[in-house]
Image (cartoon, rainbow, N blue to C red; front, top):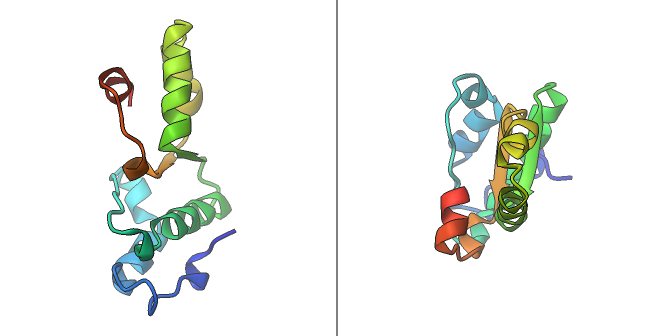
Length: 116
């Protein structure tokens, strides 16, 4: 379990502490804003994302944390089974916070990119 309190701002200097702490307030969820965490692996994007998801869960906000690879596999399977609409309503739209991790590690084909 990763938390905001465990985040090492001295080591992961790519993310300003003020921005991480502002996100930790979770107001972006109520404003229905998208947040994209970009940077090299030493920025601790996954730590930040899982810490924010943890905060949201503690606050009672429905949250889904999934890797881009898993989401894409599930989208392709749902599409092939003719259940894409059900998948979106059950998995994607049900969560008030949808956290998709490791987007930069996955090469998308045209069909996968469209579904994503």
